[in-house]
Length: 305
Image 1 (cartoon, rainbow, N blue to C red):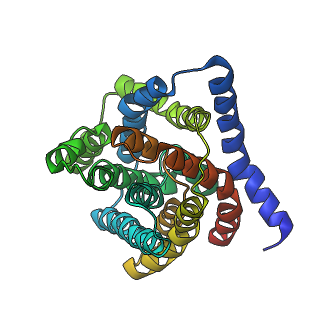
Image 2 (cartoon, rainbow, N blue to C red):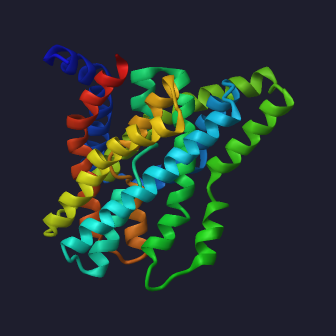
């Protein structure tokens, strides 16, 4: 793994994402764009359309989907256990500990993971990563809500939250069409493909907009624990579980990279909604994103060989 390989991989795969995200960051700082509104457009329209388009133009076997789902669950749960053990060892107070768990467990598999995998490994890998993203979204909106609301637990809200995720219905509809062999009319299919093409750029700009609102924190030990588990722990878990589950080829590449992504910007919404340490959560998202090229670049080189 030479310096030339690392530089080329970074320039071709990570730098374009960083530059577009930086543009979103600058827009957020100068024009004060409401990232929540852009996020809702992405969450309710561009994201689901992108997932639907990817799945209807691919033919992933049920076994691969099940293995990817198991990978997501395994990486998320074990990351949580690692963060919990570290937090207890550091004697973090309850609110800080829960904030650390959330940021360590739930990764940026959409805004960051999808475009990175598309650049690095192509459309087939992107189909696998979209499945990872869907399972991750389901966990964030169920298990994430449960963890974030510890102390004022609302299991009903957590369960109902799963049915409010539009990508879930995009997956179900795509699965139905694939199973029945029904094809969409040409004009409708072209409309979906056109809208899906905007999905990834919007997600990257949104990442920059969200980061422009980040604040710093004094909980440096919790910040270091969260970033370490998310970037290093997630990567190691991705390798271990992908091998155990028998994932191969682009499914393995997509799964391991998604497991290694930085903390999800959606964690800031959980922090605000459930009165966690919002400054710690925002700083964890920012720091893990800024540090991610240091771990993701050699990972992409290794997986690409």
